Image 1 (tube, rainbow, N blue to C red):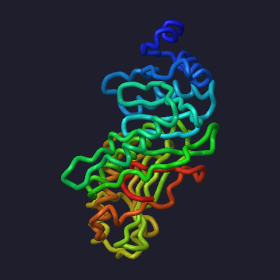
Image 2 (image 1 turned 120 degrees about the vertical axis):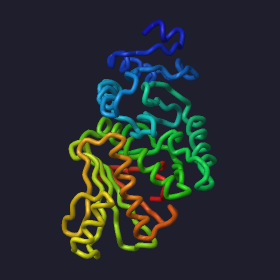
Image 3 (image 1 turned 90 degrees about the vertical axis):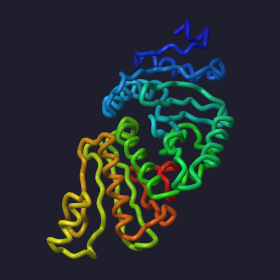
Image 4 (image 1 turned 180 degrees about the horizontal axis):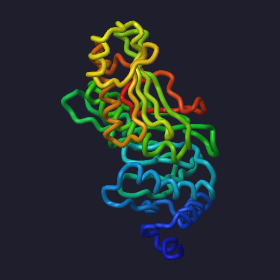
Length: 302
């Protein structure tokens, strides 16, 4: 580690033990590393599958937590994990993308101010413009009152400008959960329900857990229990009906399955009259009913 400490270089650190040692240095003596570029602690193979990246990152993350403890805020972006050990003075950040994971330390105020600016001023003003959910610094965060201090101000999140953009945001969110969630919180589930102001009382429930995969269901108890309706729902992509709820399950999801869950949810909203994301709310947002789960990159209010 000496060559890196004296030069501030950013050579890859491919050993989980080395990554943990460097995390201790950032955590205990951040002033020596402020202003340096992030240091890679893991490099993924080209075109590595989502689950492969997940298991590679698990080893590094586990080694770091063993040395410096659980983070203040769990989380991730559309590209990879975004985990922080935070106090009012400094943030130790473990962040990743599809190519690598990196460790860095930052002054708290400037980093969070820049992130708030991104959330406040970015985004698409209309359905004709490209969205930027994939560029947000984080799209989900979980605060379980761990060590350190949470930020005093939270972002309002990025709102989708069309149902198409909402579908993209939901796909990114679910793909992020599949890759990132179990590494950070083990077998805990995460989920939420979508409701629409033009179809009051109905819920579309979306959830993920490592042992169960992705699941999506819609309350159809007011629908006919007939072969014709069953055929229509199956044509939309629903797999089975149980006590009036249609559902679809994907036990070993990758990005394609995340996209299918998002397509199913948005198609159901459209079929029942929803035309704008502003009519949609995410409710009962939770990660095993422990802590506060925030979804600033979901595209709808919650």
